[in-house]
Image (cartoon, rainbow, N blue to C red; front, side):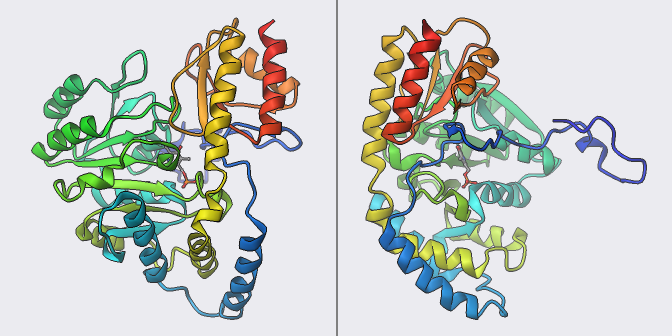
Length: 367
Ligand SMILES: *Cc1c(COP(=O)(O)O)cnc(C)c1O
């Protein structure tokens, strides 16, 4: 909600006076299928080991954390190397409090009033939001009706606008659709030809079969891949995100990061999670098969959903305004997301039991 009037004594920036804070509703006692969280809590063996290691860290909380989070970045590099086949080390990784902070770091380093950023909407609304907060001009390119990026017109747009930053989320949020690696390669070429960074936000990569843009790094040094542990690692509360890039980009992040930004607790918790990667990610297969089940349920009631490579579905075909259908779900104890896109609503894939509840409500609402 926009604050309608700011007090006279508050010297708030004029350009921030009409911005509403980012926020999806957080409501207690409902089935929360609105923020693409992983619905499974951590495995018991990980909880136990993390508790043990955090006890040791707590004893040392009188000291500042490792400013450069070297151990964590090393483990993240190992994880990305193992999953993409690209050789990387800590010099290629920067970590922060969630990938939203990573995005902010990129804007602080490479954005600003005379550096244009572009994206292809509908996409992740936090990209233009951080552009605004960092006074970076933003141009919204478009997507096809099926939410794909038309490569020819996207390349043309990049050449015309000559931006410094090009943002692509794949799998895209809110559509779930992915941009094929061949298309990303062409867009990386176009971005490189005008001296722009190509920032590929891969928050949902682990749910997708498409190769990661990390595989482009060897040929395109100006590609930056943004990742998070919030979704596939079921670690949203711990706030750990990172980017994968050439060492010079990491050096740029070091300039704009706040000193000691990543607490010792976060670093130790994330390292433990990475030591248990298979256990932490054991539910991905369940979520992918549940996605197919929810997709068929939507189809059965006559709705349509966008083919998704992520842990959520964007659907349409319902009667009435999205806000009314959103409310109808909430009346049945299910919180989904109205992303402000005409004719569409988004639902996160939950546990099988939560999806059963969603499907039951869906059948009532579609009648
Ligand atoms: C969820 C999401 C993020 C943010 O994740 P955090 O790491 O929790 O800050 C980033 N990008 C996209 C596209 C997302 O959907």
